Picture 1 (cartoon, rainbow, N blue to C red):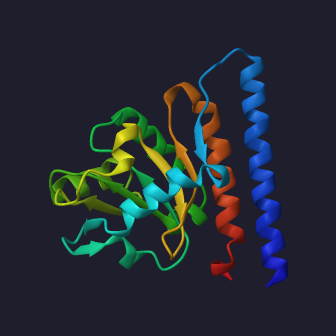
Picture 2: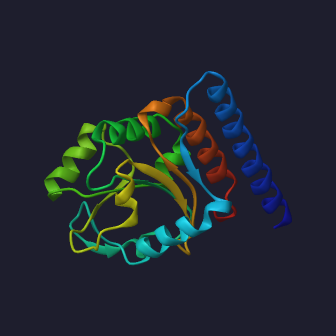
Length: 195
């Protein structure tokens, strides 16, 4: 057990180091826009998001109505597309995640507001039959704090619906995306739930 905790801590520090290194390189190149990665010191905003997703109603590709809490039995990587957002940004995030390893394929959930079941199926086909679990966010849900950002985002979510590693995708910061996904992949591989 201690070994797993040490591995997770080392992985987390490595991820933070790589991201901070990338941020300093970009800053030196004169780019002012930085990706939003919330964790640790940003717990108040994460708590608001956690509260919002605890009661999130979703619909599966098979037309089953569920609660998000019902499908997260282990740590998952969630990609969230806000109701009014940047569709090309969402497509880029999905495409980049699709190119990553088997680890992300089996642990990724896509949440978006689709107009119909047909749209969910079309989305799956359009993205080369992506292996990700895809769910529609039901219209009966109240407006979610995640929709306020108007950009797609990704985050880790464990079985208690605690969120970490929140990343808001911005097309001005494409170079951070692969580093972020690589760090997420490492975290999922070292997750104690995986053992």
